Length: 317
Ligand SMILES: O=C(O)CCC(=O)C(=O)O
Ligand SMILES: [Fe+2]
Image (cartoon, rainbow, N blue to C red; front, side, top):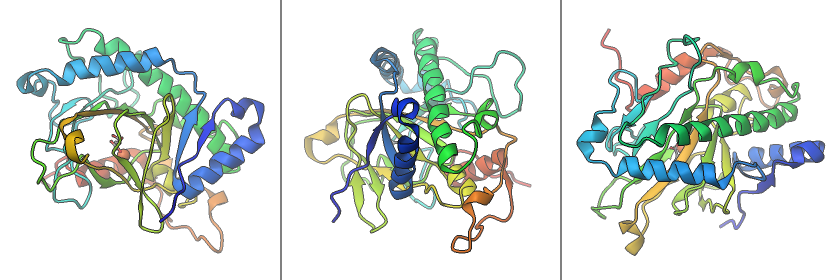
């Protein structure tokens, strides 16, 4: 049994101690696929206001929330109810409901998958709060990608024109108290994230665990103010698994804690929908031959993956 913990790094060192920071973040991701980021400068207030707004929304009656489900979009915007999403290959749906906030657009959508946002009129602060957090996380995500670009021997700005109209999603999640403790479902079944990187605004409740290479589950304990950033499948694919997308899950709490709800807010950072993911030559070697000789368009990849997790129905033709 390993006692190791996911490391936490202060992102301010990217400006003051660049080479060491890049080496350390690269090592954290190579080993764990996860890293805590502190010193990010996102005010507590921005996070607190979002938690307040989402708690108000999830407390609304089921039929009011259901009104914000957008049919045919694979849950891309608005509300998705409990029982819809399940981890790939799992028989049991997750015990969670969530809302998706997408990129706010100034003009016409640069790609049809960039749907307009919907906002719950019942919670007037929701739009302002979640949009502020979205912007902050997008900009923090860009900094993490700059460091990773250097680690991958690319220019620091390598990802800039690949994420500038990315279909990134802020996903406030509510895991209700566990009503039936004999349930076969867990809060979030083991899975890998689909996107480039995920920034997780710390839940105060425990439950998140990552799968170590030795097959053991390691609980991720979030230090107050730290944002947990992990690698998703798209970046794993681009880097030919040099940066691994680590399996993780959210387990049901035992005892009295089962009666407590859990809230969390992941931000899934996506590339531009027309970006083609093609293995980076710097990540291919004799020991690590290219696992993905066929490049794939990131929106096609996303659609394929949304079907697998129950968010998109397979077309009937
Ligand atoms: O709620 C959490 O802590 C993690 C959620 C998660 O892994 C996901 O939604 O992909
Ligand atoms: Fe996840």
